[in-house]
Amino acid sequence: YIKIASTKTHQLSSLATCEFNKITNRSTLMGDYKGLANLNVGSSADGGDAAVSYYDNGRVSFICIVMDAVSNDPKITDNLAEKYTKELLDHALYDNSFKTVINKKQAVTYLPVKYSLSDEKVGIYLKEDLKVYLPDDVVPEEDLDINYYLLSNELSAPLKSGDKVGV
Image (tube, rainbow, N blue to C red; front, top):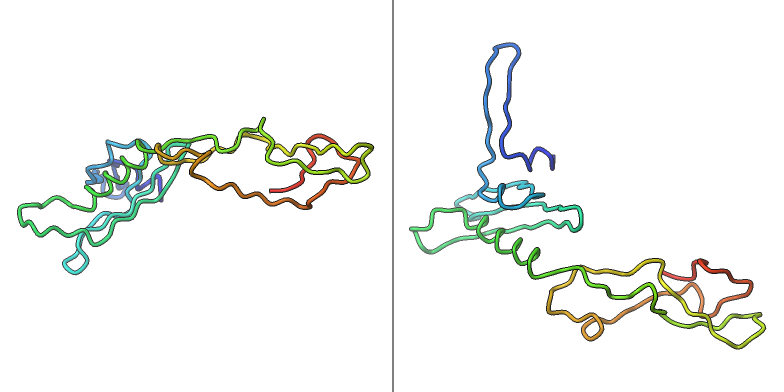
């Protein structure tokens, strides 16, 4: 369905009648965003303009839904839901970016090791950097609270590098 909804034009042919028909997706957004699939764009007298879109560029994906977009200006004939969808897509794509929230080289916490020969605590690290798609004005160290869940509040020896201790 996504493949069909993201296609700008398609040639239909009938072997029985040898007829060819070209169908065109009339959405004005189709050429502007690579990875956009307009799942439904339309309007009704009761509900105003509406649009449901799916975006996936391989790094980030999301669904954008605009409903009940109505103008009081009779001169506006364009589908307002597409206009608002464009504004939302631009905001999501150009005012946000992936930011490292926890670096894999930074210990999340330190835990004691039961049955260890020393009282030294062991650092708990992530397997890979934790990156989150955030607004550009968010500073992870200042604006986010980090929560983690450990399988236990202490570790038991023997322990080897790479053992899973939490999520």
